[in-house]
Amino acid sequence: MNKLTKRSGALAAALLLAACTIGPDYHQPKVELPTSFKEGANWQRSAANPQGALASQWWLVFNDPQLTQFVEQSLKANQSIVAAEAAYRFAQAEVDADRSSLFPTVTADISGSRSKTNSASGSTIGAIGSGGIRNSTTASLAASWEPDLWGGIRRQIESGKANLQSTDAQLAGERLSIAASVATDYLALRQDDIDVDLLEKQQRVDARLLELTRASYRQGTASNDDLLLAEDTLESVIANLQTSKIAREQEEHAIAVLTGVPPANFSIAPQPSYTYATPDIPLVIPSVLLERRPDVVAAERTAASANALIGVAKAAFFPTLNLSAQGGFEANTLAHLFTLPSRVWTLGPDLAATVLDGGARTAAVHEAEATYDEDAANYRQTVLTAFENVEDSLSSVNHLNDQARAFHNVYQRNLLLFNSEQAQLSAGTASEQNLLTQQLTLLTAEQGQRDAQGQVAQNEVLLIKNLGGGWTGEQTGVGSVANVGTTADTQAASASTAK
Image (cartoon, rainbow, N blue to C red; front, side, top):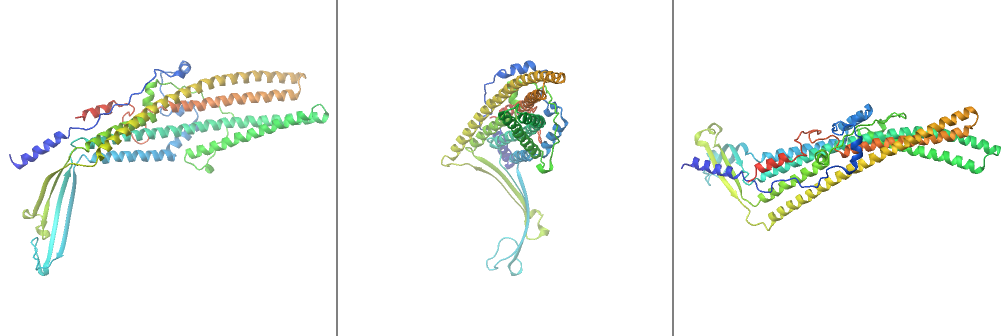
């Protein structure tokens, strides 16, 4: 058997061994899944399209062009999203770097030197010119390759891919969080627009009531206590008005920052007649939530990444093989460099193994296993928290809808009473003070109704966020990875590389 045959056989044996992959294959941590949401019964019955799906541009369901503009602007300019996109690119580069370890490394070198030696010592390499001058020119090409005998590199790549998918989901989660924050702040700002308008109307009514009370006090038909009460009522409305104005200004500042604009250069015109949309939000089944929630997907992929690192730690127990070869030319003149007599080469494998490390590799395996157990527990906790979030949102929306209906009924009754009081004033059977008092009650009822509507709208945004916001694992800012909420492909890939 010639040398070439022997070398080919050794290489084939190495490649055969490379089919082995050390470490446990990944299986998604098991979690207990309910068949339905406890607080979702009323919502499911009232939903017009319970089998529908949320679109990735879910904010369009609120039918507000200005809200849409702010959300889309925030998705382009928000610095938290920019940072998350950079983290995604970093994880992508890490996967590329890990994958490069599977391939040989080839380097090229060309060099020349001119040196002087003591002629008495007699140099045996190269040609010695007059005065002990030696010229040397070298051109070489070197290649080295470490076959992945035990799958350590492939496990590292598997871990990197899972981490990339986790980072991808985190980016989607950041986009969802920013969009939801913009929508919530915007709807709260519109609620403050309504509150400011209604409180200013109440202030005018209370101011007129105070005038009438002062006139009655001067005439002796009202007591000092009546006057003090009227003054307190007006001051309370003024105080509440300042609270609403502070909230509106701060929400405007928050939207400016979320959209990447300094608050000083940003303003939103008031809309006291703003009308809240009534979006149709379909409710997913609990099992689908595991694929829709970016934080759940990120936690699951983090566990998958940690699982693969167990294999990386276990591969350190086995020897490594490095195949290297170098060839080139070396001559004393450039003219004779690329000639057959100037050819030089080296070839040889290097098999190395750690014999004694004081338990460092065993400790590394235990560390990797403990990290996986921690990440798996974090995943299960994230799933439980996701279910809690949805149940809380459903509970809030259900009860807030009932509250809004109750406030609407109160407003409608007070509207009838106000109309009746107006008719009595026209007939001369009621005083202006009675009409203003009823108008004040009507304004308070309207504020209660409008505040309840605003709370419903803001909680609908929170429900959409807790349902995953229309994200399916394929809609992300910079990358397009496979549906990272489903681990069947990952498990199949792990199984195909198993020993």
